[in-house]
Length: 173
Image (spheres, rainbow, N blue to C red):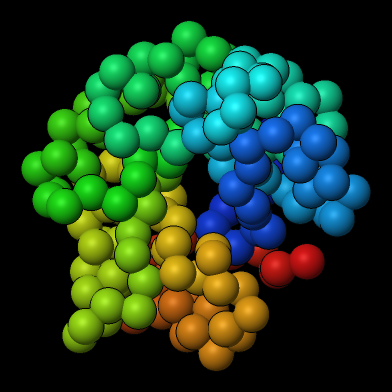
């Protein structure tokens, strides 16, 4: 099974999936990680566990998107090895949810991108201090076509001047 270190997140290609056929299509495109909703597929056709198994069989890292303690429990029960805490309104909420994630599970925090006064950099630093293994800048993940922003955010998150953050990257495929 792939781990965060194998993929090199953040910076690995990643996509959000809800159907098992999308898992197959993503693997064929060379995607390395899949963000899965904790509820499984929207149509109820596939459970979260089905999607996790599909990802594992195709060598994709399944990252389960969660926003509450109940969802963390459901994701762990489905076999999650990596969790992505959705954008949260406060550092306190982020800390509370982080504390509920088992230590053996990779913990990622989703942060909104293109914020006023580059607030995403401060939020990334706060996430690192809380103990998250990494961050996903949601704007960069959704808009990989905005190469200028993606390059800017990655260079700032990995800069030697950004000692508070110091996340590593891997080239986008």
